[in-house]
Image (cartoon, rainbow, N blue to C red; front, top):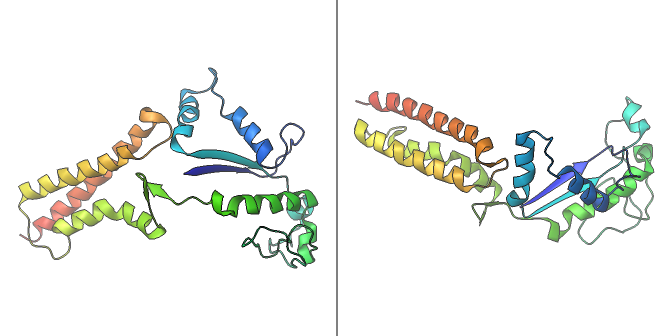
Amino acid sequence: QSLIFLVRDWSFPYEFSYGSDGGARFLEKRLKVSGNQHEELQNVRKHIHSCFSSISCFLLPHPGLKVATNPNFDGKLRGGSRARGYPAGIRLRGIPAPGATALGSLAEIDDEFIKNLKVLIPWLLRPESLDVKEINGNHITCRGLVEYFKVPAAAAAVVCGGDKPFLAPSDLQSKHAELRDEAVRLFRGVKKMGGEEFSRRYLQQLEAEIDELYIQYIKHNDSKN
């Protein structure tokens, strides 16, 4: 998976230029580990590269004072392009292609911002920049991602939820332990930033939520007896 830092209102182009090249050099500086940093910040910097296949940064200028101070500017870009210039298949309504002219409130936006936006959009949306979401090395759809977080609760519901018949307490406890171990295994198998120390509290939170869910299913199961 890829991680992109988009920094807007960048005010130091004389140090790091706008765009992805300046962003790469800026990011390299910011991700350096030093002894005077808090341990948690050091751990994030040490582990972030192992969590993503690529990490990049893009620096955007401020959109301009007219945008920031005009109470009537609503963000809607009126007008459009009169020429083509983006890579094939990439169009953004209201943002003119390179070499095009624009009308309406687009003129209120600083030229330098528009210039870099025309670079950013193709850079983000070109086919080679779009990665398929993965979990545990497997491609996953948006629907699949939602279902991924429903798995522990759904599995418990299959065992004793709804109109399922009464289950012996020992069997319910055994199934709970099995599902709990599976959820912990999935949690440990996913890459996380910050290392073991940082992720431990989230593991404890997961275990607490599963145990709370188990108590609810005990009560639901007992009501059937």
